[in-house]
Amino acid sequence: MMAREGFSCAWYAGHEELDVQGALVQFIESLRTALAPKRVVYLGSSAGGFAALYCSYFDPGSVALVMVPQTNLQRHFAPRAVSLYLEECWSGRSLEEVGEVACTDVTSLYEKGFDNTVVYVQSQGDFMHSALQLTPFMSACYNTGDPEQEKLIVQSDYWGKPGHGGAVPMEGYSTWLRAAISAPSTRLEDLLETSAAFRQEAAPQNTRGKSSSGHDPISAVDSSLTELVKNGLLNRFEPDEERL
Image (cartoon, rainbow, N blue to C red; front, side, top):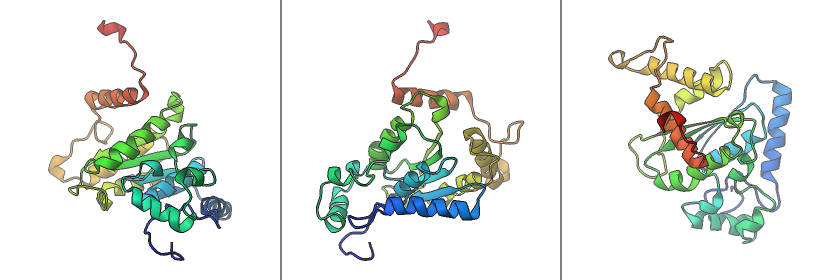
């Protein structure tokens, strides 16, 4: 991006003279070897979220914490932004042609199954990204039908700013970041419990409502709605014999 003019977003996807995605994965792997970290967290928003999802996918056991990310450039809400990137970095080649040598759709990776964990924070006021980026990505993550492969947490909320830019402020993801760093493991239950504990700490005293475990209680209604959403995406509703 710094060597070219005319566009403001490149998704860390590189250009025809340099495989930036491959270089990043190799660089991070070398850092892992040198530093031997206990845990790796990839953090990114919008185009940076796309890169975080990509790099985390190739880092088993890592966590991708992403805010309103793009997941497929073909569905980008501003096609002109993608066109400018292609014109400047890929000699005007089509997105399909670029997709043969660089990843332009992370949903195609995750639908095969994944060994990292994803925490996906979405603004309810960002309608385009909810419809065009989040929903297809969720479907891809649940594609295998194997609960052990469905390592995805989605938080959808509204922080007072409609549209895309700046839709998720720091307070929208800070507790998730703390949880990703300090939870006992990257299991979904541990991340959820740890994040809930941090939110409880930050809540005003008169609004706290702890369960016996000291964390925010999750109601049966919330749990049922989560299952309905997931099953709806998977189109795998099953009859409940007890209700027939």
